[in-house]
Amino acid sequence: MILLTDGDDVARQAAELAARRLGMRCISASAGNPTPFTGPELVELIKQAAHDPVLVMVDDRGDPGMGPGEEALAYICRHPEIRVLGVVAVASHTSRARGVKVDLSVDSQGRIWPGPVDKDGQPRRHKRLRGDTVDVLNWLDVPLIVGVGDPGKMLGADGLEKGCEITTRAIQAILERSGMEL
Image (cartoon, one colour):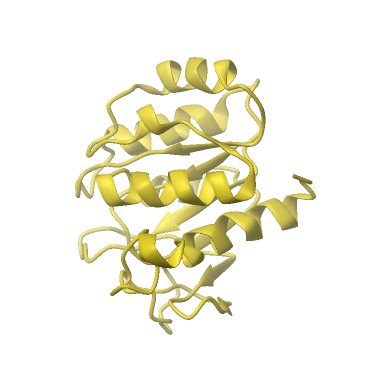
């Protein structure tokens, strides 16, 4: 499964479109701002999914502390029956978050970038991607963290009318690096 650290309505639409394009299952009910389900409830939804891989959204609604999205993310990542392939870490304008180091990012032009990006998908020279639902990743064993700007937005670069190319590319990067064949 793959986690996406955003859950607003536009992110949900971007996740659904990207999942459809990649032949994945998106658990749309996981969307919300903040995440409407607990970790145990999301694990049950993941287990009920029709097929793998599954895309799940988690969101803290701007809370820089350990909010419901990060609690659910941690629970899922530590669950012995769930194999997490990676996390699409979403940048935000929050300044109170510690941030997380990413393995790579997909910028607003669709290019792979070795460092973080900002909310608009612009490459940054900083060492950490700042987002409101990413700090917990510092303490989890996640195989791959791919940074992106705001799914479905990025000043129009990832718009629904453009097929959410950036969000799709980030998920695809996780699938490719995990050896998952669709």
